[in-house]
Structure formats: C-alpha cells, structure tokens
Image 1: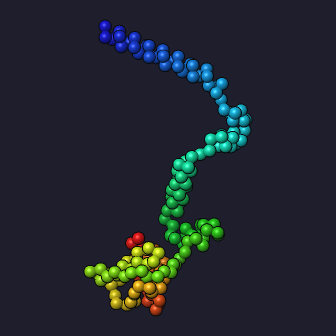
Image 2 (image 1 turned 120 degrees about the vertical axis):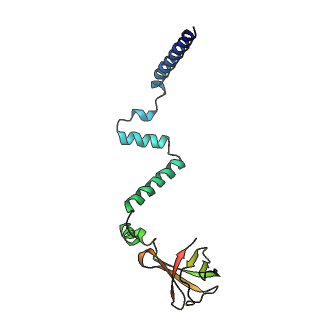
Image 3 (image 1 turned 135 degrees about the horizontal axis):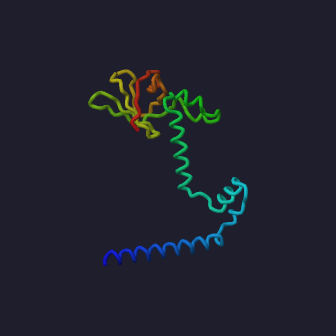
Length: 166
C-alpha cells in the first residue's frame, strides 16, 4: 500500500515536471533576444556583450586568472629574465633601486637594526655590525644584489645586507 502511494507521487511529480518543461520550451522562442538572430559568431558575441556587459567581479576574476597564468609562465625565471620579457614601455616600471629617507631605526636585542623609511617600508639589516651608522633623516638607497638579495647603501657609501619586512 505504501509502495503504491509512493509510486503515484513519483508519477505525479514526473508528469508535473514534464508539463513545466514543455511549457518552458514552448515559451522559449518568443522570449529570444535580438542578438540570437546575428549569424556571425564574433558579431553575436559583441552584441551580447553590449546588451549584457560583464560585471566588475567577472573583470576582476579575469584579471586574477591572467596574473596567475603569467606567474605560471614566469615560474623559474629570475627578475632580470622576467623584466626582459616585458614590453619596452613596462620595463621602466620595475626599478632595480629605490631611494628613501629614514623615519626611524630600532636596534633589536640580537643587534640587528630595523630601518623604517618615510614611505612606510620596513627593512631588517641582517648584518650585525657597527659599520654604516644610521639616524633619522638620513638618505639611503636600497638596491638589488646577487641571488635576489638587497643592499641598503648609506649616504656615506656603506653597503649593508637588507631584507624587507613590510
């Protein structure tokens, strides 16, 4: 008895589903968009893009995917090789050195110095040495060094190994 009730409900549900599907299929051609009549694929896509422009979220996802793809293509290249692959007008946006003014210097208990620049960048001097005295207001240059490391060069020309913290 219970099985018969269950079978009737399944058949009724299936019949309702088929009727709704048939109604939707019958209504579909009347609700077609004008772009559907464009024969050429690229022109039809352009028509739909104009009628329904992509949302900013879709643009952001496309940008993220493009950056991810570029990272995959650049994997294993050093900075110089990546810069050489850039178009000429973008190469100058990748500086090999920056200059800044010291906003503050903190000495850790280990003797390492933490240098904060006015730009907000924070650098750790990884060499514990008395060379290269630094004080607030000093001008310094940070440049790339060998094997992806960086050097902080004081105004007197002393070069100290540095690592960016922030």
